Image (tube, rainbow, N blue to C red; front, side, top):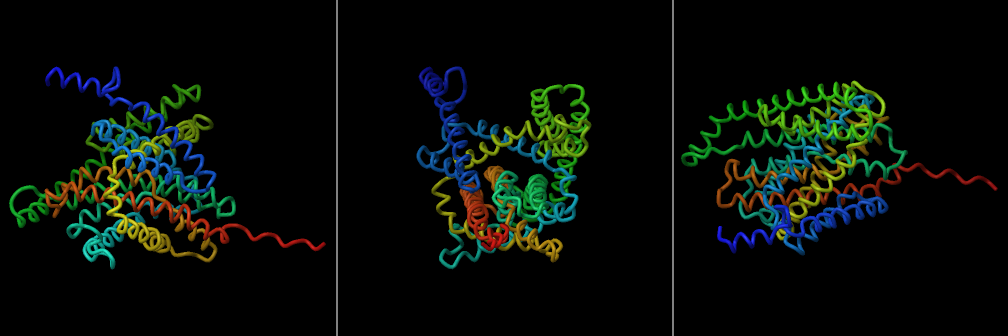
Length: 455
């Protein structure tokens, strides 16, 4: 590097840091605006993810996104935020809260997610081949490979705990009491399940990089057992590390914590240690973080303000910050022009997910008993998508080029399109279920007004 190049690189960074100039100012203003929009959304009774994502998209369109921020800096923000989201999701996976609907609450984020992913992936694959009546091949340059369709559908599987909490708040106290705990449990456990499904799809559709087309398919099949074994090792490493760190943290809380600020320090430290231990044992860092939170929630050694309820309370601001970060990151990273291109397919995919796949799964897992019809209706109307699907979509840029039947020259463009597709589908979900359906369901949820008394 020449002296002039070095001087240019120094002048382009903030004093005393390796971050771009203006980074702290822009970041501070974005979070302040996001907080203001969050408050406005609460007053308007709409999901706060919508205006925050819109803010990031507007800034992206005006200033061309995060072109001055390195891939490593983006990946650090992404990984840290996702780890905190999963740790908080683990803390929210409280079995005591869903005793009344245990079978449904367990089935939705496990069997339900698998069925949803399979059905949605096949629908997306069909749309990528047949296209829409007004748009051949749904705007794609080539037929969509099955593996890419399945992986993209997997990104849309997890629901968002905060968005669903805002939705149930709109319904008020007139909704059946089991609805909110079931939706919260689904969002918590479903996040971990979706990450496992993401890894499974990558494993099943992993390409083979040697030989011709015939060798490509044969090699992929031959490597499948070893790839599945690696995935199992990844899962077991995360389970073991999360269980170990969670049990140890339970023992440390009564020994080290005497004030709420101590609990916050310990909670964040446990999340980071769990992630590091999972990676150290075999790469299961995100699963490890979730399992550690799960153990803390369901095997507490301490009750009261320093138990798992206290942990959720002190970590709530971190969880909210992580959600803001994921929404802003995706909005700043996605290509607005590609989003416009993917708008028809993304809207159709979002509508299919929420109006076809979701009701089929909810009603298919046990039907709708007479006394639970309103409850099942509201659970089907819930399940909003938000920060976690957007976080998973960031991994598409890395994983799509590795999949079978993806041409190397088209891989980056295809991954960018799928990332934009997820963003459009998430926005469609938020608008449909967070704005439109609550107004339509209001008369079923709200009680009838009492009859006027005779004068």
